[in-house]
Length: 340
Image 1: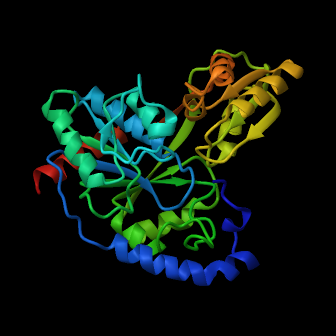
Image 2: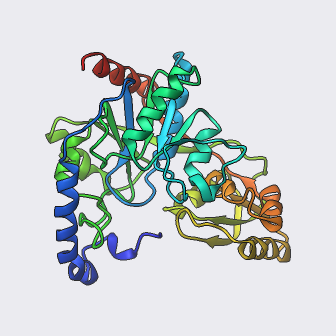
């Protein structure tokens, strides 16, 4: 899904959809306010967001996972497996599972550490406990998304906020991007992390401050890329905010001659892989894509595998202004867990 333009401002279409949003908001709020029914035997740190669409959750989860390993923990990642057919709970095996099974985010996380896919987050947490007891990971559960899911108790909840999108027009789905009414979500969160630069985040940070919620700042920075600046490229991606990817290419000084955009978590086909290869060949362009898109090509078929080999993956890293923040967040989750 690509965010519609009217989610940015309260235009006519947004107001026409507002009655539906009001009803959706009441339903989502009734679920959001339900009490947790299970407290895991490990600390649970959740990275979520307020809105539908890409806010930078997965890079933040990866950064916090790296911080956990740096202090001697073996994090277990818990995700819904969006885009996959498996409901779980199951432990992801990168050798056998494909995107169609568990989704792209789960495969990315499984490259780093034990990853559980579960639509039932309580069941996923229980499987994570079994994984920890077997010696394959342990110390902390890090959730990629699930902030609005009430059933699993979270020791610490971090909310990722895209500085350019923030809360959009402030309406709940479908008139706007909010997953639930704003104020209850802000009250439930522990801390906010504003990612990137933009004009829309200050109002949210002010609201958070009034409610006694801390906020921090982070940026997505280019990681490894084996292309030299000035290289002419065809960029393709299926992510929530393609502009972020293009900004990264600009930072690397790659010349974006052509681009192909797909919906977030788009399941690529052989025909699409062939079309991307042909367009790049016809224009003598190198191909670049994101890590999330690249994992969706593996096992797709002959053209998909060829595209996976030829495409250059542009990595991004989440960098916090306060470099010690991830470690402090983990320690805070541990302290809350010990006081249960």
